[in-house]
Image (cartoon, rainbow, N blue to C red; front, side, top):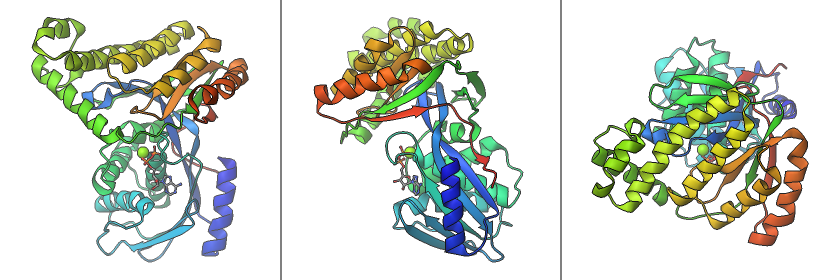
Length: 383
Ligand code: ADP
Ligand code: MG
């Protein structure tokens, strides 16, 4: 992050001709366990990672907002005195959306000059979008000294992504990018929005491997899973699957198709696993954590049917040398994307080697490997 900050500073001075008033970072994230539980009002357990977005900023005396996206070598301008409308440039909408909803609540904020620079791989499921939104929101908050609760700030970022960008995401990404804590994961109750920091044992690294599988059906399959979960909760007469138990599900099995039954079984068992995982990590019980991650993966494979053959192969390749000394599972919405593994620090290179030796040979695909550690959420980077 230091290197990103130095680059941002350098470019800011070159573009705007003065030293920025602040440099802010916000991290990307990975979900350790709790998949598709968010829209069922359940639990998720992500951690912020050491890949993020950095923004250098300076206050202006007028209402102009100048934005330079260094990754894209593009710029955007808008004026806070005029209605903030959608841009034809994709990335600019994440920025404009956050400004729109913060400005509605805090109309006294004035203009600013910004440079954005990030190293979260874009569109890889590590939430570069939340890192961008949260770094913008934290920049505005810091420059204009807004006393706004971090959870409210995260919700404004989610609103920007839902309503301005038009992506129907849950609260997980913005919460963890805002509230992440070094060496901890964050247990989020997606109903009450209560959070609890959960320590990650210091002997474990967070390894993320992108399968680089590209699947065209992600959106339609995601919507279908949401529908199936709603169908199950309506048959079970609960508001969300968070409120259902396995006993209730078994008692109503004959009233639903086998597919809907299995979808509900994944959500109900995944919620339990996520709570148990938070407990296992807190107790430094790595063996139990590994079992829970393996069960989570199998449940996504067999009951929720969101893994792909290449992802299953990748998980198996990592599982073999890892044994019961850590855990591995697919992470994210499914049909491609990343695998997350908790790996003893002294085994990271063994795992990297196993993936390099076997993944391409077995699938014809080349992985991307990210060695991560759980990091703090959005923060000021000292200049
Ligand atoms: P993910 O969040 O999984 O990385 P998304 O599709 O949700 O994928 O968000 C990626 C988009 O977010 C990018 O296409 C771009 O529009 C925007 N974005 C993310 N990081 C940056 C950045 N550093 N600079 C400009 N835009 C960014
Ligand atoms: Mg995103």
